[in-house]
Structures are given as structure tokens and as C-alpha cells.
Image (tube, rainbow, N blue to C red; front, side, top):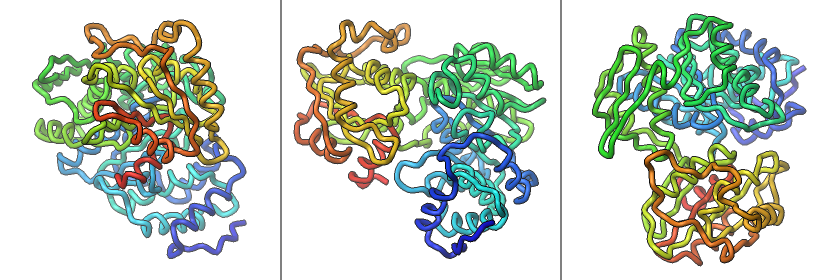
Length: 457
């Protein structure tokens, strides 16, 4: 039975420590336990429109654009994303702002009472807290980001009014499988019968369409049901019936943001009978959307780029973004990197190695952390291997896009180990010239400490 002495007035830090100890497994896939508690809390009774966003990469950006557009259109919006960069409160936003500690601790106390003898994981507790907080706030729309996969993720206790899959690639192999067909099948389980199911992956695994047919979902596929076009100044969206021409490019940077934005507009078209979204709200929302740590470029010199890219697919997109940035001759790229040992660190490094001159490898904190010395050795293996830029094909730019910089001379690459991310970042600042750029990447747990150090969050 539940014997905790915490209540709604207890500090959030104590609650989070309790959640970390509560369940024997950090990740425990399955809906039976969390589903029972969700039923007890009356989550299914919420009248809010629910949009569930899954995918390997691009979920946070997609949620941010949806949130900004819906807010500009005058709707009350609750947004749940994970993980957080610095503060837990980032996970639960109402009308664009992280909720206060008291809102979270009130929900935690409510869940603690409702769960009885049922053990919940940290993520399951978080998901239920977001859902009940949104119910209390009487939001019009809930935007819910899947944490891992889809089929057995806690967010899937919700019956989505619209589902979005942003991309499908290899990640979390131990939970989702090691091929795109299996992973696509797992992610497609957020689809619901007779509800729109948006897939923005340009080359989706066949399992997505197959599962959509199986459950009777209304599948919208990129390149079939919706698309985009653009030139140097503007872009346009085309859906099944709706056209949105002459759009300004999203404020979010990156080669895949038009894919994410077109998925957002496809979802809004699919929901047009429930949501009225004027063209002005679309324009305003695309310009206002912001996601810290996703291709985030800080003002000033040297240029500082922060990106939570932690799997090969995201690293490939980051490599393309680097190649398209303005480049000064003889300038260097200094990578400040930290990664978790359950990620494919070597493949991530391979995507970026052709564009990095100096590697500052840092240890992250926690049991999943890859130590700096191990990471440095992986970098060295990739750099010393022949044809580092040809063994994956992942750094090839999109057709018609030219790189602004040459690949590095691997014989001059430098590799150093650092105690932690902040030490590595400070070292990068010390050695960088004004025209150089500092790239901070590898994990939420890598970018978060640097943002804290800089006072950006």
C-alpha cells in the first residue's frame, strides 16, 4: 500500500526524489498499471481535443508549432513534452508557460492517493500529472508527446482525436526493435479508428499504412495527402483540400522543419471541423514557435549551436544544418559532446565527423552516462577509420542544396576528454576564435548543463 508522507504542499524536489525511488524500473513499458490509475482519475472524461505526437525525431518541434498556432488562434492549450532540459516544469505547459511547482505537487498528491498499491514509473506519474493538470485548467486542446515508441507508452492511455508520426528511424533498439518496420508498427499504435493519422516521414515503413488499415484510421501521408513547396523567400502547404500559400519560413531552424510544419498544417486541416485556424494564426504561430536545444543558435561570436541530437537520424539532420550555415574560410568547428551509453554513439559521431575539427568529449552524470574517455576513444576510432564521410551516406545534402564548407582534414582533428559538459564548454570558449563555431550536442543531459551555465533557462 501507499505509505508516503508527502502531500500537495511538499516541495517538488522531494516529490521527484520519491518518484525516482518508487518504481523498480526506470523504463517499464505497458499500459495496464497506468491505465487503471488513469481510469480512477477520470482522465477519459476530459472534453479537450487531444493530439498525440510520436516519432523518432521532430516531436518537440511539431508540438511547439502546434502550440504556437493554436494559442495565436485563441485556444487554451496544454502541452506535455519530455524530457526536460533544466527544470521539470518544462514538461507541462499551459498556454505556453511551464506550470508552477504547486500545480505539479497538487497533481502528484492526487495521483499518489488514486494509485493505491499500484506502482508507477517516473514517466507514468508525469504523464498522469500533465493530463489531470490540463483537466483542471479546462484546456481546449491537449498536445501530448509520446515518450518512447507508442504502443506501450503511457501517453497511449489517451484516445487521440488526431495522431502525428513525425519520423521513423532506429532508436531505443532494446524496447522497439532494430528495424524501421518494427519501429513503425510500434509507433503506429497511437492511431485510432476513424481519426486522422498524419505521417510526415517521406519514406515511411509499410507497417504504418498496414496498421492504419487494420484499425481503420484515416491515414494522411506526406507526398500523397499533403506536401510543401518553397523558394528562398517563402513556402506553401498543400493538403487534401486546403492550400496555404506564401508562408514565411518557421522560426525553428533545421532541414526537417518544413516536414514538421507541413504535418502540423495537415493535422489542422484534418481537424478543421473542430478547430478554426485563420491564416493569420498560422503565420504568427510559425514565427513564434521556439524549442530550446533544437538547432538553437545563440547570438554573438563565436557562434554557439545547441542541439540535443542523440541518435543517427538526428545527427544526420544536424550535419546537413551545419553544412548549410555560412562558413568562413579557415574557421573551425569545435564539438562539445556528451552521450548516454545506451545510444549508438559511434553512428552519431560518424554523421558529424566530416565537419568537426576539435572534439571535446565530456562525461554526463547518472548511471546511463558514457564516460569521456570511452567517448573519446569512439571518436578516435571513427576519425582514424578510412573514408569516414563515405561509410554511411548520411551526410549527403538534400538534392539541390550545396555545402558551404569543405570537409575537415582528419589528420589535423584534435580529441580531448573533459570532466563534464560545463568544463568542456568553457574550454571550447577559451580556444575558439571569433569566426569559429561551438557545437554542443549529444543528449538533453548534455545541452541542459550548458544552458544552465549560460543562464538561458
